[in-house]
Amino acid sequence: MISDIISKAEKGYTIGSKEIYELMSITDKDQLEELYAAARRVRNRNFGKKIYTYGFVYFSTHCKNNCTFCYYRRSNTGIDRYRKSVDEIVELSGNLLDAGINLSDLTMGEDPMMYADDYKLLLKTIESVHDDVGISIMASPGALPERMFAPVREAGADWYACYQETYNRPLFEKLRLEQSFDDRRNQKIWAKKAGLLTEDGMMIGLGESVKDRANTILTMSQLGCDQVRAMTFVPQVGTPMQDFTPYDSTEELKAIAVMRLINQDKLIPCSLDVEGIAGLRTRINAGANVVTSIVPPSQNLAGVAQHELDIENGNRSVEHVFEMLEEMGHRHATSNEYKSFLAKHRSGKVSI
Ligand code: SAM
Ligand code: MD0
Ligand code: SF4
Image (cartoon, rainbow, N blue to C red):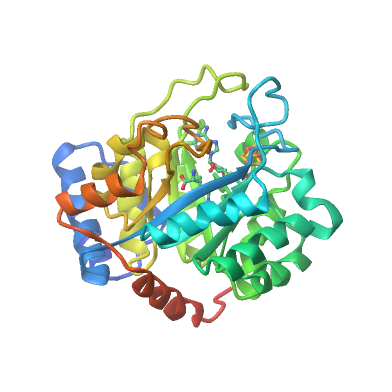
């Protein structure tokens, strides 16, 4: 039964919510292996040995929001926060490009300073990285009004990332306090209409059920995003969820593999922001094809879920990640290879 679903999905036939639920319910070790092996075959058939790489530039950790899971929520007072200047962000992105990284993920909390004067500083930041560096750009600035997506695209962003975390509406409302479920869902649609590639994402271990996970995977896939992700929740000191018992990575790995089977030519991240470098191999083996949250040491940059883990010791550095990919029989994609992937996907029609 499980084998039938895996092989049906591997061949590219559509599987529905019931079948996704069955796959997300697997606990047997051999069946899990079978799932990961199928996901690897699908990834390798579509992408060969190539793995894309993203640098993470968390350029402002100030935030007006109060998400219960997040270290940088506004009520977590007394933590260190920073805001990088445009020049610093340009320099960081330039270093990423020179080191062979495919994309600079320009991420921030919902920082009022960046949003002031009609998002002036945010747009200036994107534009400067585009004009002065030329690396591909993902913007992860939080939720924006619909009218801002065209300017974000014009400033030079290739991608807009905004994660729903869960498509269970009541759970969303308990997590993303004072934020609108529909508005956040619409972000992806508005971004796509403005010509941006889009990323959606789910978090695992927030109190959701297996059915919620299956439904979230299906909804993210149906929205037609070009990149979809899963990240295990990491409890954060000073937040209402600090005492949650963290999950191990099994559910995330399953989600990566299932997402791969139903989004065969899409990008699926292996984030170093959950388990640090220790989590790279398992996620690649589950079918991921982009390493995200590569952070250079000595730049005073933080991660989101793991704000320190493996950064200053250099384990999340470019060199170390490239080396590990080679050891696993993969190779990092060149900037031209990445740009041609973007061109191919950008021409896709809006399917919603
Ligand atoms: N502030 C913007 C926003 O929330 O859309 C951009 C930052 S976005 C990169 C932050 C994402 O990191 C969240 O959407 C969530 O998926 C993930 N994240 C935040 N805190 C986390 C945690 N404690 N554990 C795991 N993932 C987390
Ligand atoms: C990551 N810490 O890739 C980053 C972040 C934002 N677009 C991505 C969650 O894991
Ligand atoms: Fe702010 Fe994003 Fe953290 Fe929510 S997840 S508190 S919006 S930085």
